[in-house]
Length: 336
Picture 1: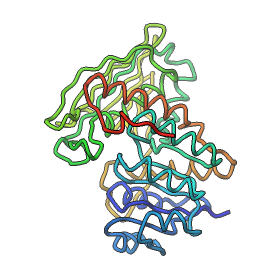
Picture 2 (picture 1 turned 90 degrees about the horizontal axis):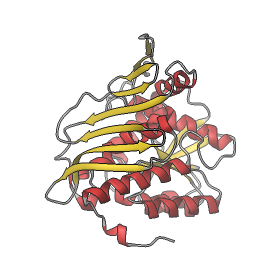
Picture 3 (picture 1 turned 180 degrees about the vertical axis):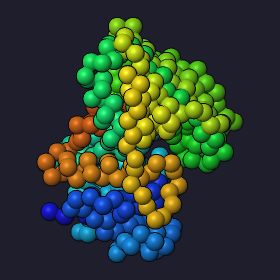
């Protein structure tokens, strides 16, 4: 069974996803057949050799040309667009964050389950070959008991509209901080018992930097530094009772990590003839491979990026926002 993808929006991340998908040599029995976007859909389709262009998201959702939709829209649109495709019997891979808050995420997941359709938050880091190798190293016991995680993520995007404007779902923790949160959760695999956040807001009431401390049972901690004002050394360190592992920059989809014994492991990404907008975006293809695998196994969620994981992330993101005083209009709304 060929899995047919539809691309929703023609922005930078959609370009990178399609480019990574099309240039990967071993993507299995799946193909991108259609795109729908508010602007530039014709140019996007021509650039990426996508055969069908729809003039609206609704038309794409109602069509018989696709099986699964990749949602690359802005954060405030994730809930409604994802639900539109689920309502029309399509599986969904939605860019992170899955929704703007916990209530939306819980509602969307519940709806997908009721329709018996696949839904996954596109936390592409989880499917990195480096992350999988890191997990094996930890499980081998060489590191001992993992006690501490430190992650830094800073990029100069404070003037970018999607980050700085509240009406666009702006927020450092929702845009880049989610990568630090998911890393801590990937390592500790349980919900923290305490969250402490300090940070700063812009004139629109949007967080532009924060330090987040997550405390887990057994005196284990994660310290996460997030900043949209300047570039940081974006690496992650996992410390155990027998040593430490370093995940090199960019930790959110790395090609290199340094083992407990100091040996270096490398996982180079495939090449593309088209340029990417974001670093190491070739790795976006791995989440498409995961979707294909899950669909062919009859799963409605990924074991590596489960619904439970998305709900924990949504709760953590909301907690961080609340501690900093960042509120969206949807925070006061109820969702069925």
